[in-house]
Length: 619
Image (cartoon, rainbow, N blue to C red; front, side, top):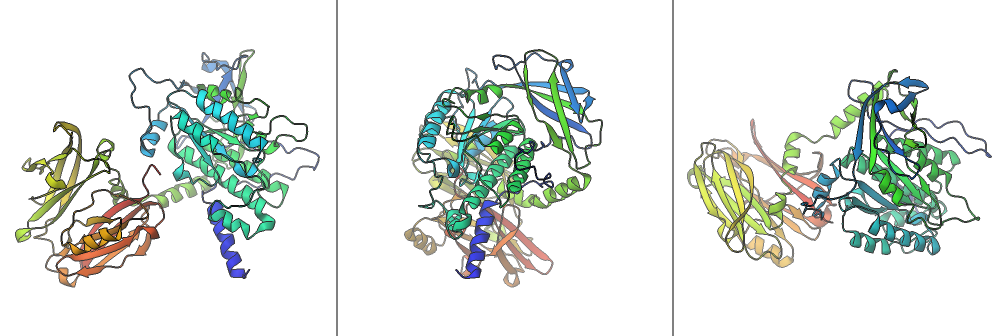
């Protein structure tokens, strides 16, 4: 193929394969002799408290029956760093049995946002099952693994445990936690092993792989390795406490052209798992067999993150150890006698002064250097969205209880004599035919401008410039008031500003007929929601008003969720209607976006933002 096409295909594969930012990798250790197993790679950080040398280690202590020991004190632990004894300053026992309170009626996960809130709780256990389909045989290994996981997901977890199923081609923003064990078992039944199977392809990543057939297995290993690291980072972002990954795979394969590439990756993966407080367990679906040995790479990955590798002919019961280990563990903290900001690896050894117990803890950590910490702080600051973008994005999701029934939008435009005219629009969700919403609109001085139902899903009223407080509550089908929510609207002073922008009115066209109807109307019904599908089309209308409006420069730009400009949007002037933006969603990837509308004339400037999401949170 032409060199340019090959380069493009290679770039596509690299971008998708390495989609998650990986932690910096330390130089690999010296090449071990061919007949010698390399030593287990070192571990990565417990947590450092800002400005101190505080180190935290998660420790699991099991008795002879494999049950957690929960009655230990600080004096029971012997902790050494690089061989030097350390004084345990803090010790906290974390217990989470997965049981739901008798009065808890909110077990079902309603949305990713709900799952994130639940996952952040200390008493909620979080598990991810990673199915490495590239390295699981199509027949016996896949069948054995499906049977094992079906039993595992149906009977091992407690009612409040959050469990997700993923693979190397599932983006992290599509990982969905659930408490529905039957639904999870049905998903397990659909899993297939694709080791050595290249057609049909599943995604653009695999399309790119096909152009490099000699390297396809290495590319698959790189995809798997990167996806596992992305899953680790994803778990670290949603929960500070302990998380667990069950990695179902026969082998990671070769992530590079030399054996040392695997050990370099392993080093980084272990460091990432420990930095994100994630324990990894490995399940070899082949069971016990004299023809092969379990992967030493996966064994090292599990053992050096506080986990274990399972390789037997009946692992269903053994896997329950994963859940049991997460039911009780100690958070142990000590002040390192050394300076942790030295960029070096420090060994940790944890023992318990009690006979007959098994201790599982991380074997050490890399202490980031001062330079690395400064670089990380600068990068974090650079990745933060500007406050105005964060504020705009926060309005995408309506109050959860409101969003079940519909969405409410409020906007202001100049009315008679330039006095602000406020419009409220209510968009019911599909399938909701009864009920509605009632709104009370009042100013900062307590003056009430409107109080009543949003009849016909849209009402308008005059208001004064300033902050308008909107108190809304749902109206049930029988007319009784329901749940409440509060929000505000900043009403511009259109009469005094040299240049100002009316609140953009967003309309959604789902079909060509919808689009024609919107364009034919001078005042179409606003769409109050801010979540769109890729088959939708967004029409945004707004007016620029004021003495300098006629000569103002007006622009519209599409921004990403961190405020970076992605595209300049074409503006169309419609006589008597102001400006119009026509945005086909099919041209945009799934994610969150902001449309920034600016109007300026010399020193007079005005700006407004419209945020929206492509793809619903449930997808």
